[in-house]
Length: 442
Ligand code: XUL
Ligand code: CO
Image 1 (cartoon, rainbow, N blue to C red):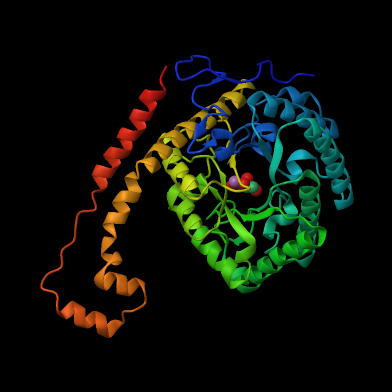
Image 2 (image 1 turned 30 degrees about the vertical axis):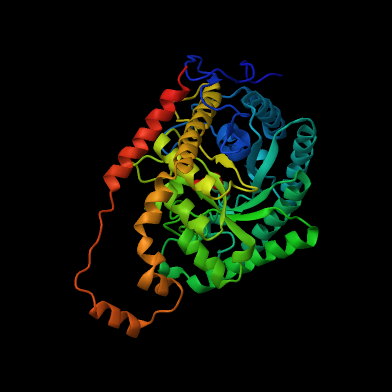
């Protein structure tokens, strides 16, 4: 059965009025020495695209998909069929899933595993003839009521064991399907009130959980990259993986930093009070930028809206970080994004992904030009030039101490600072954006 009537999505160029065509994303177009496809490694998030139904806290489902005529395992199978059709239409190289997205949970863990294995068999056989690979999979340790107090950070050791079993199965599946990464997003790993919380035990247990996962991956020979996905809040009030800085210190404290990188989500960054590019930069300069959940939030709303990324400014600055990182390695740009509740038509799924891919394609073009012309590098180099000579160089080389610096400071007649020129730089960024857009217009 066919789920999407539309043909394969083609590149038609910036002048195209066809909503089902790429205007800027051309998989084999070279930018900065590699193709767009190689740099961006786009991925479809199974949960938003094939399982979401438009439910929100105030309203019933709005999205009735072609696969919804089935139920149970038949529904799960129809979704796999629809998913691979979708991947092919879009020409997207990767997808991602949680265990419970692809197969229904049974009434026992054994039954859940049986369902999951059966669907994994099906996914595996589709992957044999598909160009789409698995960017990452993960275990959902947050939806089921058993995880009400957390998964790895629960007060209930039976729940910890159950979560561990789900991750073990997830790693077996990652190995089987060749997942290039394995993700941990700490959905319920946080707390609501300290009045009932042993914070130290919870954090120690979370580290124990990660060590067990690493040990098991080693044991079975699974060599995908482990990723932590920071988020500051929602569903818990305070999440332990708050942001990159917090998670990095956690990983360092528990001797895990060498084995993990970060999966940075744009909307999680803004919820943490950071920009997307702040989180990417912090991960990058620590050698920890692994992958990206490409979406965007709404500055007027304080929750995780997971919108498709269409902000060209943010996409440009994100691509600057990704280029400076030499790419994302085994990571990619995963659209952890959902169409709005009112965008309930099935083709909205394709159009939303096209908008996201085109936005990052523009971002990549602008970023490549900014890097080629050393727009920011040049300014930054010049701004810190005092650390390349004299007393600054001594500080950087560890040749200065408080005494030598006091002597130097006492000898100064006046201190002169120079303007940071922020507004000029923002103007230049706009010029690059507009110039790039005018060049691609046909
Ligand atoms: C939740 C979120 C998750 C993770 C995977 O905010 O981003 O979907 O990406 O569990
Ligand atoms: Co995410």
